[in-house]
Image 1: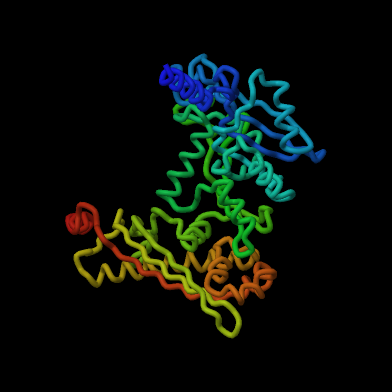
Image 2 (image 1 turned 120 degrees about the vertical axis):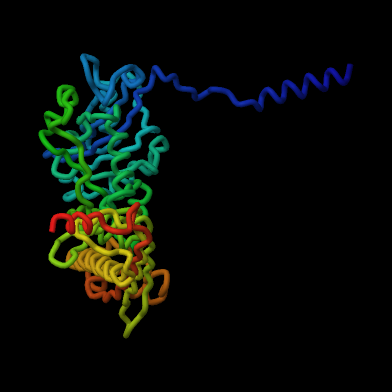
Length: 409
């Protein structure tokens, strides 16, 4: 009898320790926010634009983000407020469900806001919110308002926010001029005196109004599309300018962020005659103190394949391969130097040299850190050396062009 009483007591006590669904939220009561755009109005208020998922349309037969006579996979709501918290609460007056930010994977900052006000307040608000994930990716709306960007519909991907994230991931892997940056990484750069923030830009090619319509998606070649465009350089939390092309890739080389890209080199009189596909690279940056001033040493090692040749080249000849490798090294070195010179001109250390100096010379860094961006970084010397190697030439060693030219002679 005593055993049964003891067992009942233990069971009753155990039940008290079991967790329950005291904070459960029904899916039908939530408005899942996929992306949030942030702008600043002329009267000084923050304007947020929320891209909310329509679960029924996503799960249904809607193809390519929109089509037929069905509704789009997302709905967009907006609100204004003196701060982001007020704007978010005001948005509840137009949405029938509770705004849920735990799945917000994309934050879009308007270019005007990033240039004039900066992003410090935005990062602070995101970091304080227990529901918002600090791992959410951030982009700059290049040339358009964040509201127009968030309202745009996309082909192939039903949810536009997913299209942006996938595009950033793919272009980072294949092209090397853009990078995915989370709010956490941006916050780290803003807090560091030895590095400045860097963020990918995204724009709208075509009409921003057209990009918001389902008719745009019902064409085989949509007139308006979202496109990764530029790499935003920040200084003290504010957008300074955008990097494009080889300068953007030069910064990526210096930050050791290039996963894959193409380097075109000239051969004899033919420009961009040989396409070199980078399959792996490694950039090491170190620092030396010379007469009290830091000197940066950059060593980049690149391996890749020959992807295309527009001229007959005997790549079985080892001396020819050496010449190709030297041209590739020179091309990459020029990109690195051009990007570094541009960053020095803008007095913004987006390449992270200050962090390297801090790690190698912590005592000297105490003297340099307060004037690093404006005084010391623009005067830093850099020693660059690139090693490039051709590992493969595809399925053909002897160029097809060689036989073709002989037949025509």
